[in-house]
Image 1 (cartoon, rainbow, N blue to C red):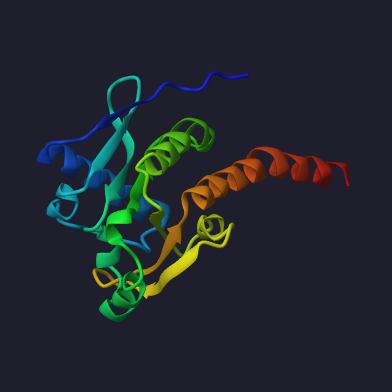
Image 2: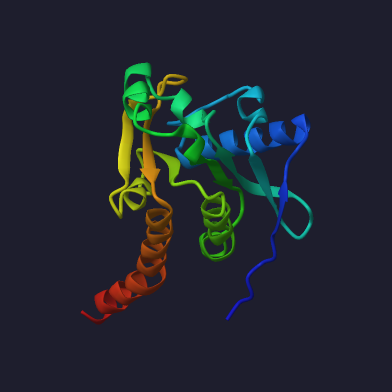
Length: 201
């Protein structure tokens, strides 16, 4: 069995590191969507966030990352139109909310990301101790996994900062962990079984 590559994780603190992070995220979003999604957010948009984490390969190159941010100031709510934002926030203590945002990878294989990076992301979210974890998605195949355990749909529609259609979800800690487990089982247990059955038929 091939050995998984080694990756390290480090919190990014300087403005230049934040800019490199955003440049990497935007480039991968555009590439993976084949140009359907393009963003160019200012670095100030993430400067206040609690944890901006970079994923580095064995050569020290930045090859991925993610943002975990504690409320009450939440980036994801800023892309939701005011009526929907106020309706959802009315009964929620925003200081008991955190958000997972801007996940990206460049050259990290699917298996390595699932086994080495996603568990770290989930742990970072869950250990914040917040009752609600906001996450987002676009109209792509990953969105079906974000919906797998029926999280609350906060908003579906055009972003206030771009023309992109976005989905903003509210997860409990248990639902976020369960979503990862469901995706893991489907990709690494059920999918290989389905492929074997298809070859045998």
